[in-house]
Amino acid sequence: MLDSEFRLFQKMIYDTAGINMTGAKKALVSGRLAKRLRDLNLTSYAEYFALLKNGDNGEQQIAIDLLTTNETYFFRESKHFDFLRDEILPRFKTGARRVWSAASSSGEEAYTLSMVLSEHCPVKEWAIVGTDISTQVLDKARLAQYPMGRADKIPKKYLKEYCRKGVGNQSGTFIIANELRSRVEFVHANLKSDLTRLGSFDVIFLRNVLIYFDLETKKQVVENVCQQLKPGGFLIIGHSESVNGITNYLTSVSPSVYQKAC
Image 1 (cartoon, rainbow, N blue to C red):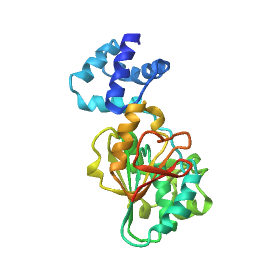
Image 2 (spheres, rainbow, N blue to C red):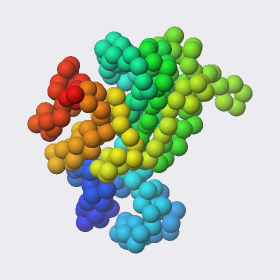
Image 3 (cartoon, helix red, strand yellow):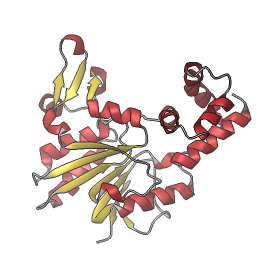
């Protein structure tokens, strides 16, 4: 991949998803797109980019899927789920409640939330929405099936109650129980775009996403997300992230936990 070719994809992923890729990502971009060039019998990355710019939306989505990072696991940064259980859920006395996993990747965060709400939410009506810009990982999330090695962070009580061990040709995997899967909906969404179609939420998990954005994009994404947060609702971000100086909607209530003014 030539430097000039890398800059084309660098700008494309920034304009589309807001992700700021430095020059150090050139090898990653080259490696992830190489198979598409072979599959399409193209001789250069410039040819592939021209294909994308000619309006092939299906191929554009494949490129986005390949170039976005999707690292996640069950009960990641577990203190956030402790805060949800101990400080937020007890406030839910009446009404239907909604929680948003705003960069849900392959679904581990959304299903972790479903386990915690199933066990501790005081109201019976609750639902979870998971969104991601990658359709590929959303398909994996809807399957809700994972290698057994992914279960090591799930507390034994939850593992026994909400996960089903695969047998036969499904051996070595587990699947999330139907009663939780029915509470979780996965939707394709770009955090840079208008998100009003998703509705409003009591709690939003926007974790380990802002680190990929520059300041301008962070402000745009936080603005879009906060528009969907109910007054008095909570936004939870990654421990290494901050929204200080980015928005006036939120007040810090705990490390990486913010509340929207009522």
